[in-house]
Length: 285
Image (cartoon, rainbow, N blue to C red; front, side, top):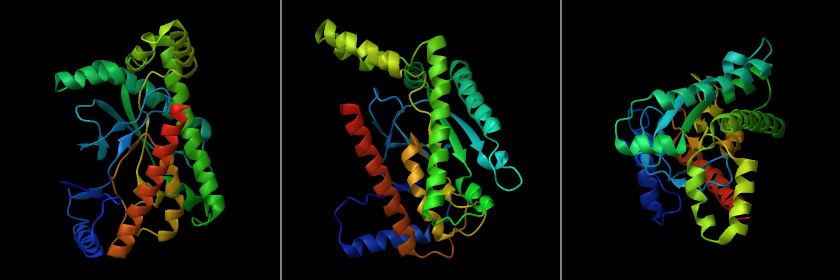
């Protein structure tokens, strides 16, 4: 069971406090979880964001209704050397393997409904869930509340995203781009040859094989299987790199209180809203 909590909804302070107190009290009553109103985005600037009112339970992510996703996972802890240095070449290879595996599984999967089969053909959605962000900072010995730690983890998240995008772009060149691009470009045909030519150029420059790629969890900014140290909230801006968000939690928050629990979700909401607004502006240009 998932409770959608909307920080933009106008309620009285008393009602808000009561809701967050109840959610806090139920925090460990699996499968109950709090989630936020959400969209899923695409790293391809030609494809719009989509409302995500449904829950994909295996991924613990919010997704469009009847959408077909291939879930894959990469744990950054598996690519750390002795003093916390990342083995970049091995990580790069693992991310590219995920994209190739996801492509194969789309063709091999037996989807449960006609709508999902259609979505699989149209969007080729991947959920490459990259985990271990807090673990990377903890192993490095950096102060998680510092500007330097945030800078480093954001650079890593950008690198991960770019690697997935490059792998998808290579597949698009070999096998054809995501068919959703043809649907999105249909309106260009109605505006004459000039607009159609511009669209084709934009597709040639930006086309990917998969509509969605990177999944992140806000809970993964904390080192796993430990009490969640509030200093690691500084790392939450990496969520702006995600195409979809998971709420899987592997950290202990029993030492928090309802106010800190609400503050955590409020910060996530602000980051995701800012990323969504920036994305919309970029896609309108």
